[in-house]
Length: 157
Image (cartoon, rainbow, N blue to C red):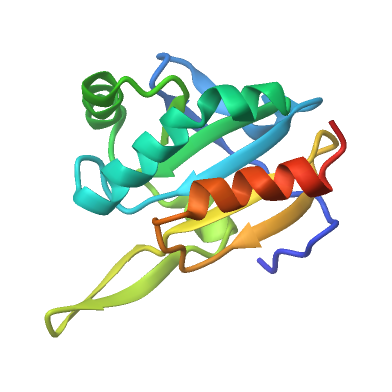
């Protein structure tokens, strides 16, 4: 599926850390920041999650909801969110349904081994459900600030 800026973002329904099934459409009327990350409790993913946590109030002031998505199960997400005090939902994409729709389930190489995994990426969806910005192959350092600045300067609040 090809993602196009200005077009409707692909919908999904996934299990969340609040014990419920959560759909993208549940957030209509809010700006949504979806960040895909490879794995709970790993250094880069922990840093990214904590950066989003630390900026959570700023995002809320901009009427933006943060959703973290990885292939880890809800139980793992619950431990991760609890350990680091994450105030936003983490969604379990165990079958890579959402990752495939957003084109972030990729062939990766590490120490000479090839495997399928998440390419760290963030997507910004407006209050009408349209994709307005995407960041692919995200480098963690400074990324959350960049996303926050983009919303401040470019989004309808």
